[in-house]
Amino acid sequence: MTAKDGQHTPPELQQANSSAESTIFSQHRILQDESTNYAIIKNHVPRSREPPNFVDMSAAWGAVQDEEKLRTPSRQSERQPIRQRLNHFTWAWFSTTMGTGSLANVIFQTPYKFRGLITIGKVIYIIDLVLFVCCLAVILRRFIVVRGSFRHSFVHYGEAWFVGTFWVSISLILQGADSYGHYSGCGQWLETTMKICFWIYCGFTLLFAIFQYDLLFVTQKIDFEGMTPAWILPMYPLIVAGPLAGVILEHQGPEAGIPIFVAGVTYQGLGWMVTVFLYAIWVIRLFSADLPVPSLRPGMYVAVGPTAYTAVGLIMHSERATSILPDNFLGVETISAPEVLRAVGSIGGIFLWLLAFWYCALTTISVLNGVKTMVFTLTWWGFVFPNAGLALATTAVGRVLDSPGIKWVSCAMTAILFVLWLFVSIAHIRAVWKGQILWEGKDEDA
Image (cartoon, rainbow, N blue to C red; front, side, top):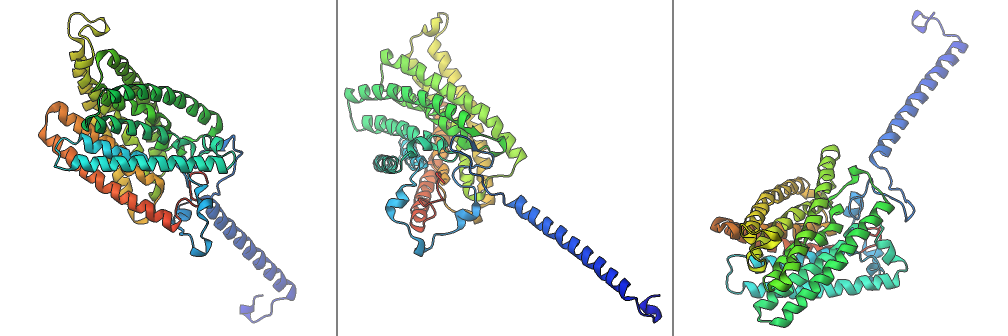
């Protein structure tokens, strides 16, 4: 009988019902807690600390993985001494000299110049030189003060990819020296100096591209879902060797020019082909995984550079072919080999030009979708350097086609690039002041 029928439930039955209800409630709470814990674990997997010689790259993107850590400002009460902060100065800081040097070169190549534009370019080039010397001094201090940091920087899962920015910065400095030096009236000594510097640069960067990738292959366990365009950075010094050769060839004779011409083409070819392999992984990663966190999406612009600078390199070599190469180059006797190379190189550059724009547009949309939650990271310099390559490619295409419309577009791109450089520079200074970068746990060496 039930209580509804007016009869009392026996104490034994009441105790059994109470025990059953307690068991069901406990099981429900356990399942609920397990579900909650699973959700927490699923959405917040702590980064594992692997030994230095074997690092898991499956969750790595550039320097920092935790968006919340990026957004957390440092409290005044936790201010660190400047000496301690400088111990976290990484190779990625050379992205500042990449951006500044590339802007100086873009300004020099701008097709339609107003009075004083070259002076602005010279000032920016001098700023680039000062920045490079300062960055070099500070990172050497870190390697001296922090024992083992030099070796560690070549195998660290966040910092190792950015070592190539040092060599790219040197390439841009050499380009600016040749362009602005000859504009200012430097003579034969500059031509000889640039020729020597070019071959030294080629030797070091080829060794770097071989051994740096070998170190990464040996020391990294990489999942393609963690792939970023930063994987291309160790090959960037070879990619920009083509445009560097094109600039130097303008003031070289055939005797010195032919070896430089061949070297520029071969280095450009190696850089471009390795990039093509990595492009395939990058597109697969975009299909199969989420975009990087908003603060790191400007780093996606790195994918613009290889295509853009290869287009620039091909067009510049094609323009120099008729003045450097003999008519019977490569043993061709029936037609003028330089004229053929001029046509083929120009078409090749035009062929790649729009691909660079596609990568730029794709990244711009991704950045705009997350712009409200972005905070500064050193990947923001991706706004400048890779897009400088696109501006140079547009200038080269306009020059080859003799198109006033394309030339004016390249001028507009130069103006936009200058505004972006100012914006990123101010954001960079502000981030250092607020402790968002150059701070323990917030840089590429974290």
